[in-house]
Every structure is written in C-alpha cells, then in structure tokens.
Amino acid sequence: MTPVPPPPARLRHAAAYLPAAAVLLAVLCLLSLAFGSRAVPIAQVADALFDRAGADPQIEAIVWNVRMPRTAAGLLVGAALGLAGALMQGLTRNPLADPGLLGVSAGASFAIVLAVAAFGASTAPTNLIWYAFAGALAGAVSVHLLGGLGRGGATPVKTALAGIAVTFLLGSFTSALVLRSPLALDRFRFWAAGSLTSADAATLWQVTPLLAAAAVLALATAPALNSLALGEDVAVALGRRVGLIRLRATLAITVLAGTAVAVAGPIVFIGLVTPHLARMVTGPDHRRILALTLLGAPSLLIAADVLGRVVARPEEIQAGIVVAFLGGPFFIALARRRRLAEM
Amino acid sequence: MTAIRAEGLTLAYDDRTVVSDLDLQIPPGRVTVVVGANACGKSTLLRALARLMRPVHGAVLLDGRAIHSLPTRQVARQVGILPQAPVAPEGISVLDLVGRGRSPHQTWWRQWSTADEQAVAAALAATGMTDLAHRPVDELSGGQRQRAWIAMAVAQQTPVLLLDEPTTYLDLAHQVDVLDLVTDLNRRDGRTVVMVLHDLNQACRYADHLVVMRDGRIAAEGDPAAVVTAELVTEVFGLDCRVVPDPVTATPMVIPLSRHHPARAVTA
Image 1 (cartoon, rainbow over the protein chains, first blue to last red):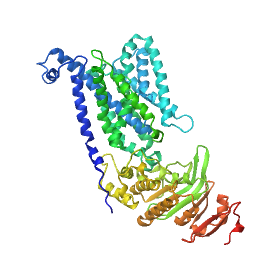
Image 2: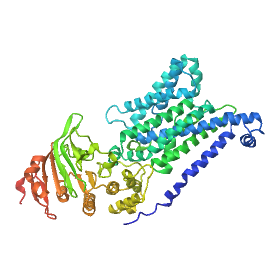
Image 3: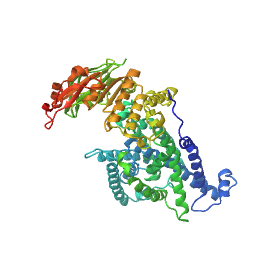
Image 4: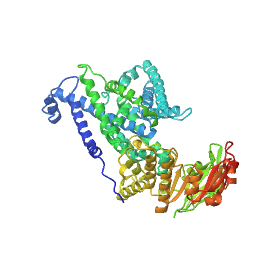
C-alpha cells in the first residue's frame, strides 16, 4: 500500500498557530492593563500588579478595579461571541452568520430592555442573563424561519437579509421602550454600541462557569460540524444525528451570545470576522477553527477596546464602535466574494 | 456478509407517493445497478436504502432488522452512500475530505487512530488519489473530484456502498474510469455495490444485477442479458429501439430509434 506523502511545509508549520495566538492574547491583555484614557507609566502598572501594597493606591485601584475586570470582560465576551459566530457559520453553512447579524444579539437586547422597562426586572447582569437567553433563542429562531421562507429555502444571503430585518425591527422596539423608561435608558446606553466597562468582577465570576460549559459544548460539537460541512445527507450517511447537532449547537449559541449581550451589549462583527480569519490560517477543519477562534476573538475585542481608549484621549470610544468601524469593510469585502452563495 | 433488502417499501415526499409497495433483495457481494426514466423513484429508493428517507410503509432491512430502528452510527459502519453531486467545503484538501469518512469509527475521546490512518491511505491508493492527497478539492478536475468523494466513502469501510449517479457531470472517459473503479472496489474487497445510473448500456456492462424501475415499481430485474429487451425499453422509457450485443462485452446494447432514424434504416 502506498503511504500518503508528507504534507507541504506550509501546512506542517501551521501547527504553530495556537501557541502564537495564545502569546498574542497574553500580550494584548497586558496592553489592556497598561493603557487607558489616563496614561499610567508601565513601571507603575507593574508595581500595581505585582506589589499591590507598595503601589500608588490610586493607580492600584485603576489597574485592579477598572482595567482588570474590563480585560476579563474582553476575554469572556470576545471568546463567547467568536465561538457563537463560528458555531453559527458551521451550523448554517452560511459565511455571513454572526450573532449580531442574525438577530441573536438583537433578540437578547430587546428581551433585556423589555424585562427592565416593562416588567421592572432587576438590572443585575446575572438576572438579565435569563431574559437574554430567551431573547437570543427567539431572535435566532425567527430569523431562521423567516430566512427559510419562499423558494429555494434558506440561502446565505436571504438569511442575512432576514437577520438584518429582524435586527432593525427589534432595535426599533428596543428604542421605543428605552425612550419611555429612564431606568432602561440608563442601562441601555452601554448596550447601544457594546462596551466592556459595565461589568464588575463579581458578575464576571458568576457568568464564567456558564460560559465555560457552553464553550466545552461548542468545542465538542466541532467534529460533527465537520461532517455537516459535507452536506446533510453525507452527515447522516456518516452516522451523525443532524437534529441533535442542531440542538446542541443552538443551546451553546444561545448561552454564549445571550451572556455576551447581558455583559457587554450587542457587539457585532467579532463573531463574523474572527472565524473567517481563523479559517484562513487553519483551513476548513472546525476543531481547529473553533480552537483558534477561542483565542483570536478575545484578542480582537481587547485590541479594539485598547484602541478605543487611546485614540480619543481623554475621551473613550466604546469597543463595540471600534469593532464595527473595523468590521464593516471586512463584511462588505466578504459579501462581495463570488463564491459566497456556494458555501 | 451484510444483507440489505426492502420489504413492502412505500416512499413519499409530503403526499406525493414516489415508490409504492416495493420488494427488493440486493445480492450480497455483487454490483446492482438501478435504472429507469426520470422521476421513476430510483434515487429515492437509493436514499431509503441508506436510511436518508423514512418509509411511509414497509421497511429497509439490514441483516433482517429495520434500518431506521438501528443506531445511526452502527448503520454508518455497514452502509455508505455517496449522494448525487456533493459539494465540498471551500479549501478542503483531499486528505481532509477522505479522513472525514472515518467519523463513524471515531469517538470524542479517540479522534484519530492507526486504523484510521491505514483506511485513509488504502482508500487513497484504491482510487489513485495518493499523489493528490494534499491538493484542495476545489482545484481538481471533475473526474478527480468524484474520485476524492468515492475515496471518502471507501475510507468509511462499509460492506455496502451506495452511489447515486456517480458519473453525473463527467465526460465519457471519466465515466468509464469511475465505473471501473467501482468494479475494482467490488471485485477486490467483495463490497456490495448499489448504484443508480442513467446510461443503459453502461448499466448493462457493469451490473451483475439490473433493476429496472417504472413509476415507483420494479418493472424487471435480474441478469442484464436476460432482462433488457427492446420491448422492455419501449415499455419503461417509451423509446423504440433495437437491442444488439455490445461488440466488446456481449452485454445488451440499446440502439435508440427516432422519428428521423426509423428501424428500416438498420440492418441487424
């Protein structure tokens, strides 16, 4: 039997991408602790990090109470949005899938605002998460149903259009509610564009186990997505239970995107862009795409957040706006690609 | 050896019945070819044999047990199917595609084993794709691409292999190439092969057992030489023809007649 020839060097070296992405993420986390709208010398940041008792108390407070939770929020929210986007793209075989574009984030935002403004729910993020899950699921399902109407079923472009329609519709409902309720308005200011500054450390600790469980579920679904990528018939022929894959992935997407919205608001494009960048490096294997997205998406979000802090000093631009500013052109380039409809 | 048969099989899309009350025994270790006019239910039958479609009545029996009641992974180790004109994800390499055929043999705690490695190497060698292993599937020619997909189904190592029009979109040379490859898989490994083909003459050449379908029922089945007559072709396809022995294989060869080429022009 002829042995399979070894892969070309380009592919062998691609194995180094995960450690490289981990290093990049670590560096960006350090930058996120070091840079802010108030310029603090690196040495003092290091003091505050490693010698809390001896550091300037004001600097110590900035680093530990402001920048640390903000960085952690970037890690959690970025990873959650990236994985949710990669799962949605794999599940729907739609390169335009993203929780921010397919109604998931809009549904979660609307549910949160509805709960706060209409039913007087507590605005603690851990309470809001449950409304976010329900809204995320409802948003995703309605876009899926709407996109599948008419001849030819759910094509990528039709689903994206349905997603944009649902996002605008829910967005206008959300605005209407917010303008009538000062409490929701106060809360909503953060969600409007997406920001990493609203979550405190206690909240982040509470959502971490939930996100970790959803991330494990997402990664465990990767081999099944590899089969599904060959078409539904081939996936069944390979012994996959397609309904079960959909259910598992939808559960993971709901928890990941819902939590991300409850913590940081509807940040778009992270879930769209990162899996595409990851796929360029890894090729079409979902196990690798998801693993790299898990490291790459928080890198992107934290980088955007840091950028937003330094470009407009002493003011700040919210991370969600920076991401949208950078992600928009990427989205257009993607939508213009010829082979889009065939994916 | 895995035995597969259909019993009282009725198949429908919504309320449109496509196959009705069909009984079929697939001869183990042989090549069975299903032919028939467009929309006669031949592809639907093949999908049902692979449990891609749930029967309205009757059942497909795998070693005597209803295929729909068996765990799908267990079925995937016994029956492989290559659907018509499958689409590969952008940028996937031949090796990755063929490797994905191994998934029914893998579990989440054991993703890749020596057995997987050997099965993939053997499938690539059997289909002549070893040298193209690292090439992206979307850069291959139509014939090579179909070989890559067949390699994926071969790597699944199922005793039964179902192929839905494996020669679609291929030029004549590549059609012969793919059919020879399928014959190799049958003769060398003793796999049971069931395929749907459009070309009657190819069907007669490559089939040990020919199943001729008409309107969701079996019009005739058996050895092509015994089955294919001018009367049958007229009845099933609504085509007047002569049937002569293939000069190379001596299997039946169908020569169509037409308004512009009536029978009197032919000397038998």
